[in-house]
Length: 75
Image 1 (cartoon, rainbow, N blue to C red):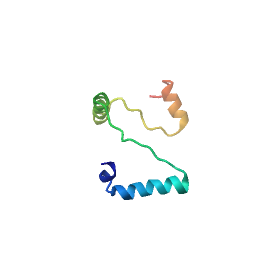
Image 2 (image 1 turned 60 degrees about the horizontal axis):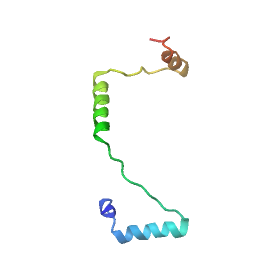
Image 3 (image 1 turned 120 degrees about the horizontal axis):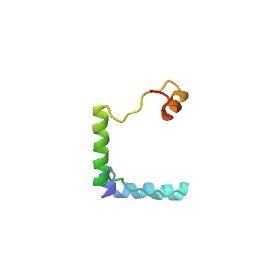
């Protein structure tokens, strides 16, 4: 199922994995990341803030300006 989803025949995928194991002594494990409903709601809030121009920091010319902004000394 996973091999099919990335467009590889299962045999090709297994051969690639075995070659990595034998030749490079490498085994890869990974799972796709899925967002939880909570994360989707939070990201929707962030998207709305970006569209509305809220809760965004300004662009800084240098690191000193960024530190001053964080300390509340730069508007």
